Length: 454
Image (tube, rainbow, N blue to C red; front, top):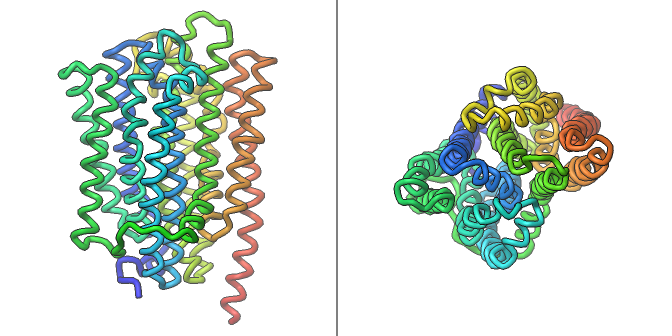
């Protein structure tokens, strides 16, 4: 029988529960995102535009590592929330132990393969001769130690799945604060340059991982588990997390293709344009974090209550998540469209780079109001054990809309076609999400009515 620490997911009023589960995660993610912003600011202002361009070029590979993390972390978290709602804590613990082993195996494999192919991959995704040395120096340590990041974030996902959002926040904030403190130490004081940014990340992950393990050792958690491996459970985890991984891999491909399009555009100051796109990417990765936090909070509540067959609560949290995420994204869309320089000020004082960045924001801001729809929609289907629908949403957004448009529109509109493709794919994804979620909403309403009559 699950303890009171998870039962509140099925009894607390939905609106305060949504904020209770989302706000600590949002705070932790934004602290971590703040590290990325500070990291980019140190690199851009201290090491120059080529180093900033290297961060932008490297971002697709970082997204691939995040994709591998989400394959396991998001997958096991969705299952654990649902399983606890079904009053099966022992099974939830078995899933947690299997997830840790799967994360370690993926980490070792990605490190070996990544180091072998690193330079070739960086060149393929747009690294110019001036940028490649910086990009290699930054990514090599991160790829080699990718298993650390995988297990760290898997543990934090398990924590939030069992309702321990505050402990998850502690892990994420620890990583972020240490990163911010260690960045100038490694980059400037110890003279490691851009390698120092990677070293700061690795050391902070080691400390956060130690902290996460200590929570379980000291009995601070609901679940008690040891690393283990069961093929059936591993398959369930992978299938549930696959839609999120497909999305993150797609984001990596989109950024990589956009980088290549910039390099092949024939425009002057290609490296400057890469730097501008890198800045936009860092800002977007930060501003989207509250949406991710809301999605995480939503999925935990939704999965638990779906497992407990409390469909009225599933419907309420779905409406709440869509409303709150839309209000938030509208505010940032306004900034992107009308005050873009506010978003780039921390990164650069170069007027050309700022102008390029503002142009990109002008396109992205049009669709940003609706950016929460695909996130919430995909998370809904993962939480209610419908991974095929979640996979369809992620596949359509990336591989049917975004990537084809990235190839087609630049043929007719040049570099502006790259930015237009990002805007159009987000709008199209939002429309499809509304259709699929509305259909599922009606199914859940019928289940709700049937449970009331029963």
